View 1 (cartoon, rainbow, N blue to C red):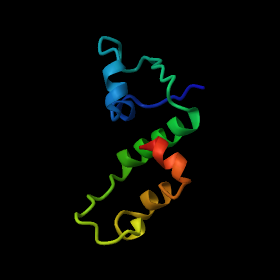
View 2: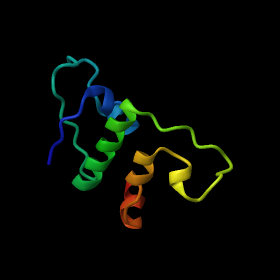
View 3: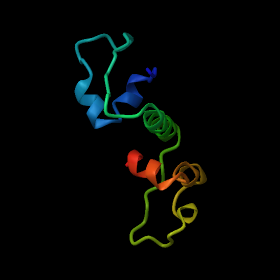
View 4: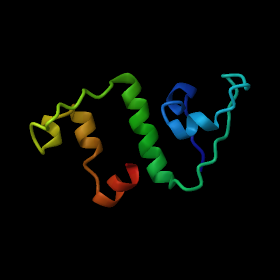
Length: 92
């Protein structure tokens, strides 16, 4: 499966950033193979990055004031991580 992602979003990933051909025109599509990443997980990572570009996550205060993430970050982010533990570990 392939995903079309704006260059600015792709560059948010250090792995992808190292694989981008800087000599290529920014408007030209580049295919970056990520064979070790499941499509569903990559889709979630892209969703996160695209949202983060529009609404960056608030800085998390330390020590945590609560174990309830809804009290620590914006609603979108707390809902984003409300997934099965296995998916959460793959996202990390």
